[in-house]
Image (tube, rainbow, N blue to C red; front, side, top):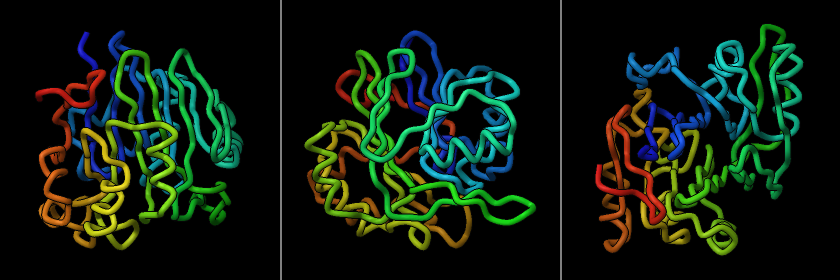
Length: 243
């Protein structure tokens, strides 16, 4: 089976491993205006990875727990809060800098510069630090999802520690870094494939990846994979294959 990475709009991604196991990162699907209608209701979910607690990143966690009872990995405080709110679920919390292996998939939490809280009828609930995610699946290129973040110098350490070949970077501005910051992040990370996210969901965010493309160093522009939500990319040991 072909391994794939599919952008579902905003910061949500579906990673399908070579054996068919399916990983969702920041699953905001049902109310996500950028998520294709055919992809709003998953047919399989084995693992959920969360960067932080905002509604546009955890919006469909409850539905996935009800339908599939996947293992959910994220910041310890975020997992604890969601577990208490839902009253069920297989949560496996960790913290920044930590790594755990779930069914052969190694997941590491990196820092991110943002905020994190869960919005409830009773008010905001603290959800720990925001994070980025490093995903290391057997036989496939390492993936770094930066989460919602500004650029920061320690991205060079992420490159040294994990050598991610596929880097998912937010480019929308206002709530995350914009084109210039994301281009600098890509320069530090030097991946073989760059996937932009967190843009053209709402009018207040960047409407395309054009400015990001122009801001990238010339040698990195050919590595940019700016696709429409729902279009899958082939995930290989070297990075991203022909789509």
